[in-house]
Amino acid sequence: MAADGRKRTLGSSSSVTLEAQDALAAHLVATHGRAQEAELVQREALAARDGLAAGSSHRRPDRSMLLALSTLGQALRLQKKLQESAVHFRKAYELCRDTQELGGPTSPNTFAAASNLASVLHEAGESQEAGRLYKMAALGLQRTLGLEYPNTRGARQNYESFLKEAHLASEPENES
Image (tube, rainbow, N blue to C red; front, side, top):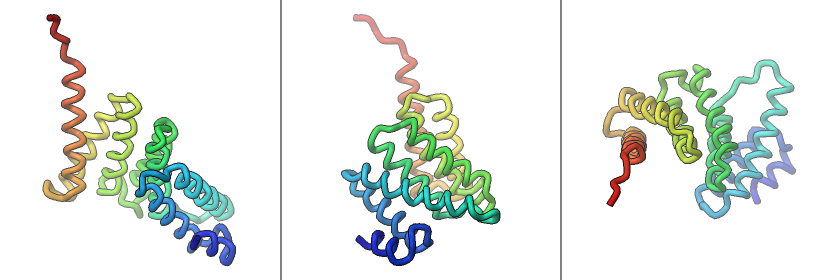
């Protein structure tokens, strides 16, 4: 495997090694049958990044960290580890929101991360926060990217489905 070869040659904390691990984990998540393997690979890459950050006072969060957190969140979600998944999606959302280099509070990255977090929170039954984040993501993406952008359409569909489900759940059942 290329990631293992790079790790042996360049070391486990090399940016090239970490990028290879990130790519491998993303591929494993995309195949939907290998979420457990993706989780292990991504945890290892995140641990190496944490070690680098601890040894450097000027290392800033970057896009690769954001993608790694999101990939781990998705791998955990696919395994139905919803609470832990939410932790990683929340870190990704906060990283986007709080880091100007990643877009800051009004960027499409932040709204997409909010949508990912909303989705796992909704699945975990945390409807109030999920609804707030779905709405923020749908409106924010619409404002920044426009109505026809695929991410905007997806966020709007998620929010509309959430609203329909919430409406149906609040309707009293008819007694026959």
